[in-house]
Length: 200
Ligand SMILES: C[S@@+](CC[C@H](N)C(=O)[O-])C[C@H]1O[C@@H](n2cnc3c(N)ncnc32)[C@H](O)[C@@H]1O
Image 1 (cartoon, rainbow, N blue to C red):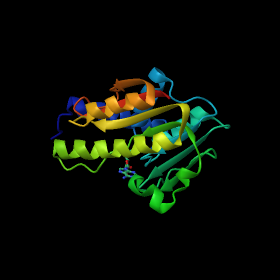
Image 2: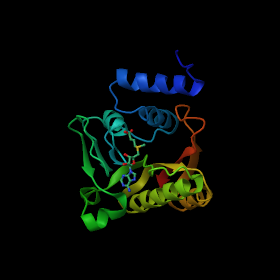
Image 3: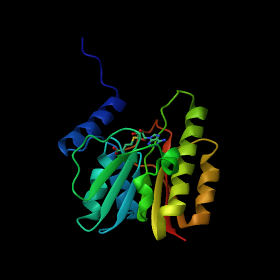
C-alpha cells in the first residue's frame, strides 16, 4: 500500500528535485539564492569565505555570482566531492581550530563571509541551539579579522536563548543587521539567518 505523502515531504521533494535538475548537491542553495535576492550580499569580483561549505551548493552558487574575477574559498570538516569551477576551492578543517591548523583561509581578506554551519543535532533543542550559537560566534570572530571594511556577513543560527544577544552583538560590527527566514527553509526548522551589512 502506498504511504500518503505529507505536505512537508512534498516540499522536500520539490527543492531536492530542483537542486538535482540544476546540478547542485544540496537544496540549501535556494536559501542563499533568497538571501542574495533580498540583501545583495555578493557582487561580481568579490572574495567570499564560505564556512561549513560541504557538500558544496553555496560554494558553487557563490562562484557563479563572483565570476571570473572573484574567488570563493570554502572550509568544512568534511570534504567537498563536487567538481568546482576554477575560481572556487575548498579546504578541510574545523572552524574552531583554524589558527592551530594554519588554515589557508587565514592568508587573505574577504568581501563576504558566509556561514551555513550546523552542529550535529542531538534532538535536544537547547543543546543544539547552544552549539549553533558557538559556531556563529566562531564565524563572527573570523569575520571580525578577515572581512574588509564595508564587507557583508551572513550566518545561520538555530534560534534559542543565545540568538538575541548574538544579533545585538552584530550591531557593534556592522552598519545594518537583519534577520531572515527563507521560504525554502522548513517552517518546522529552528534556523534563521542573521545578516550583517557593511562592516564598520
Ligand atoms: C547545512 S551543511 C552546509 C551546506 C552547504 N552550505 C551547502 O550548500 O552545500 C552544514 C555544514 O557545517 C559543517 N560544520 C559543522 N561544524 C563545523 C565546524 N566546527 N567546522 C567546519 N565545518 C563545520 C558540517 O560539516 C556541514 O557540512
